[in-house]
Image (cartoon, rainbow, N blue to C red; front, side, top):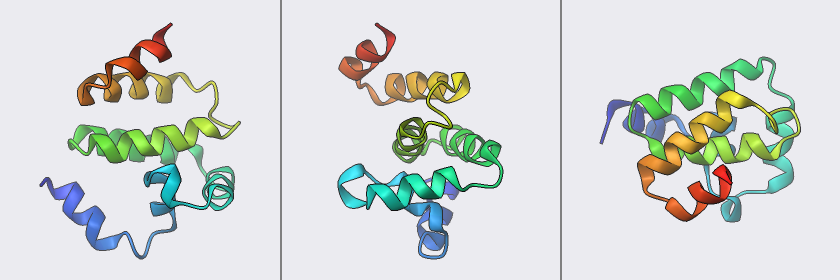
Length: 102
């Protein structure tokens, strides 16, 4: 397991944005979206996605991207869309990759 993933698991109880990297079934949708809307600097979420993706935490990064794209603030964000496609490709999710491209 990579350093970022280990660090992530150690501190996830103390960071509120842990809500947005879990799957949609495990989280209160309203709480997660309201957290994303109230982030002081939207670039921080992009940076978190980038850091997770660069450290091979692909599933966590993809979950964060999916949550961000649910929010109207990031709905048409090109950077997050490109990370979404990259992560889908890395994880071998070809059906969803094809749906997003077409």
